[in-house]
Image (cartoon, rainbow, N blue to C red; front, side, top):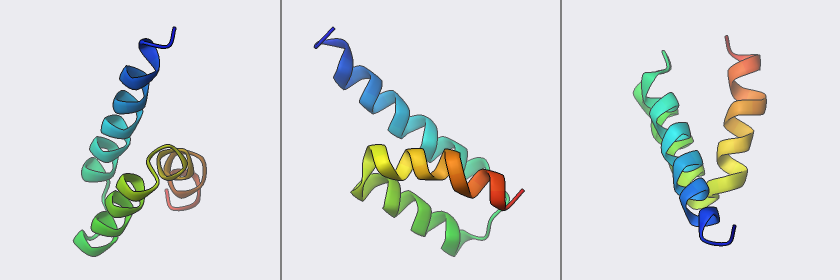
Length: 57
């Protein structure tokens, strides 16, 4: 199980960044979201999926 955690971590961050890049936001907002996800990987990704996608669709 412990060996699986880094893989899940990388997968969650990569999927969140990919989802931001595919979104219809302007380049500045995409850059800020990607920066937030990279600086706070798990929290940034969770925030992206929980709040941003629901509020701005």
